[in-house]
Length: 177
Image (tube, rainbow, N blue to C red; front, top):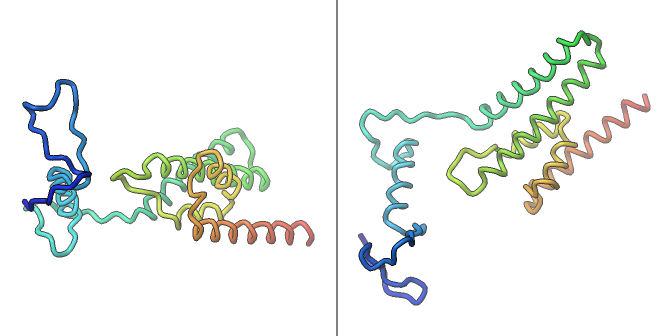
């Protein structure tokens, strides 16, 4: 282990005997334990250049595909619920699909907000933009405002605004034709 030079911001480590009772030790990003944990995550993910643990196969799951399947399942459940009530016309199918896409959009925004800043799988932005493009713009806008998620990131907001303009222009074109 490398020795760090003493700094004002980093007090010397306190042993377990010297620590007052009832006070836990917070692991900083520079601690030995967190470095070992991060190295273990890298080893399990099978990143190149790092030795793999014997018997551990890296699992490659595309997060975009995973969350797209989750969104599709939510839409399918909503559409199936509408069909179970006997509504089999085109308008009911369209509204059920739109409601399912909006529900899936809100759920994935909420999940992404909940895991932001943690070592968990995040929802890729392409999935969030795709759901907004396919009819979830209202839920995306509401979840951005209610959950305060993805509101500061300018590139994300530019793409989202582009999606909203495309949807508005297609909607106006459909109404005027």
